[in-house]
Length: 321
Image: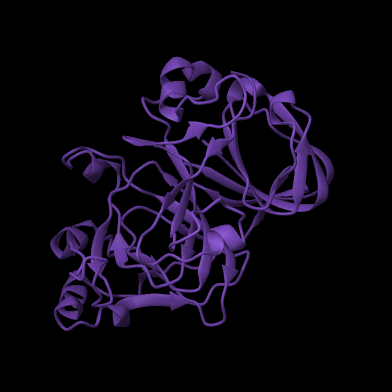
């Protein structure tokens, strides 16, 4: 398995979605309905990316992890399931104020799950769009519990208005939410465990309030963490790449390209997502132009992938540390 893999996207029609996954990111959404997320690379229970190209076409990512662990992971330790999940999100309404457990707490759930550390890259932000990222300084558990009881959770949240190109790192146990008007790329641990603290007093598609998990949220939140600010990009050894996030779960780099370049080849897998521009690759199994919204996975066995940015291109490169 030594070629770059493209997967069929999986769409989620949560109540806060819109149509920008199609109109901006060129996703083949159904003709009707609003869609919140496009899961590009996932191996989480029944949620499985399916290969769309080459000899592995039709196989799930979970099958590839089991059958070809060395090909995928290279020198990195193989895991029973693919450890990362990459998605695009269209926040046409505010998401719930929520928090995710870490690995230790996730292991105690029924069924057990990974924790969820994540990072957001802002693709587009309408004027006045907000993110709610971390608590204000010195907010205690008692303060937040009182705010929940008084319907004043937002008063405890650190709020910023991000711009396109901003990156926010959200470690597990950080309370957070995307606000309406944002289009986002997200890399995260392959977990889908969420505790909702506050949901804007709204109802779901069935006309009933969506469940809240107040006790679990208060137990999960790290009250020592405080506000989250946009990341300051750091230089790397390659002048075309800047480092946005390095943590124990993943590395996130942003590449700005013109002309020919190689990517990958570090004896580990790389998830690549194109945010602007258009590329072609030198590989026979990926002999097509790839533009904005395209995602592919370079297995470790593939080695360095030669690409040609036929237009000025911005892409994300995500891999294990």
